[in-house]
Image (cartoon, rainbow, N blue to C red; front, side):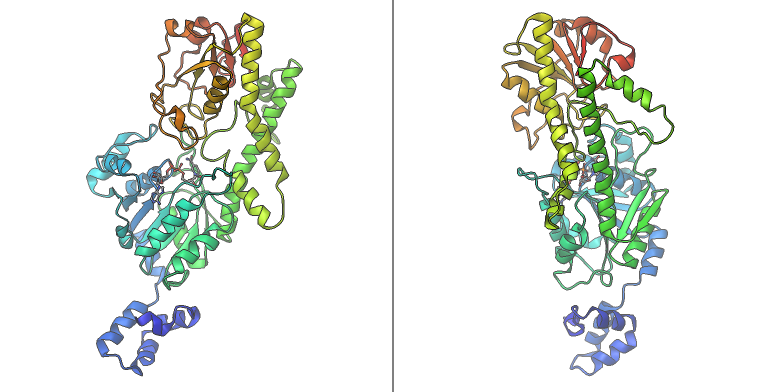
Length: 489
Ligand SMILES: NC(=O)c1ccc[n+]([C@@H]2O[C@H](COP(=O)([O-])OP(=O)(O)OC[C@H]3O[C@@H](n4cnc5c(N)ncnc54)[C@H](O)[C@@H]3O)[C@@H](O)[C@H]2O)c1
């Protein structure tokens, strides 16, 4: 009611008036409103004071809401709660909410004690009830950003989250998007949804983008020790987001806009995708020359400057590297630009599973006179990278698909994935179980294909008991295991 008179579309007037209650009083007193209504309007229109908000952040008097409690959101929630800030996690998956409220972790590398301690203290809880968003001072969004079937950005999770926030938004909140996405998402997609009901970013609420740089399983860097980038929609949003993250992270880097922060995150992941494609290409070339690409990379990395090692593999995996570069490719088209480097890297990396299967077929044919048809293959490691339980976009699925299409019978072993969960891309494999890895089981296969080099696998046993080992990760040689039956791929 009161806000219509001040007119949210006239943001400057609104802002100026809202800073001066007396100016407001004279503005309203000419109307037919009662004194009570006028007072209510003044309170409702009082400027949100960023300095006061900042002071409350520093005194840990704010409540933090985290939307999306996955690989990114859960460690972030724990980080804030462990500093004594009150955290409420929001997720649409009721099983995660139930486990978190019972003090249990559902992510392998996060021990349950890290969840149970703040839950028991009453500073961490979780809910599916989005109406509670109105009680949060800061809201951080960590929902998925996958690709559609046509490999275009799927912003449906960001859009539905923004709509949930908008439905329960109140003045004075800080909203930060962390999900990886193309430059412009924060201000072109989220901001209009949050402003739909008349609130104005920078005046009534504060909006920022701060990309997650989580690397699950990394022994050296975690959520609190990895420097954090922040770009705000205006100086107050930037100041508040920097202040908020400053409570849990040692180094915060401010950039000039949300778009710069969005582009920086994509640049980091494109850099990786392109360099992995380069070593994948070099692997094929050196293979033909009888040169071991792993030895070459290990030698090259002795140069103390100007070289950074990347390693070949059976194909890209995970929620970031195979996906994020195509967010930029899509956005570049809006500017009538093509991203040839990114496309080429995608092409090379996508071809890797097919090359690995060719190597398996060739090695079996040459060494045992067998074809893939009716052969028994053990895929060793299903997770997309070592020592994690995450199968998203794992190249192992593509390998299984190609091997089975060639008539092979495929089983897998992964100590972290006892049963294959439902995945959007490969629902047909859900429910399959990991086979045990003992001598008797290994001798029943024609070939063991090392797809992921988990540390807790006995590679000596694998080599001793298998007829043929195809190693896509240099898992054997890097552990000093050499044998004529090992083939690099
Ligand atoms: N996993 C990583 O290592 C990593 C690293 C850097 C950046 N990122 C980025 O962070 C974002 C999140 O990734 P993640 O790995 O944590 O994903 P995730 O799938 O592990 O978790 C996302 C969570 O969001 C929930 N969710 C989905 N829609 C929701 C909605 N409308 N409301 C509330 N909750 C909802 C899901 O149930 C899930 O629990 C992505 O943009 C990703 O690209 C991930």
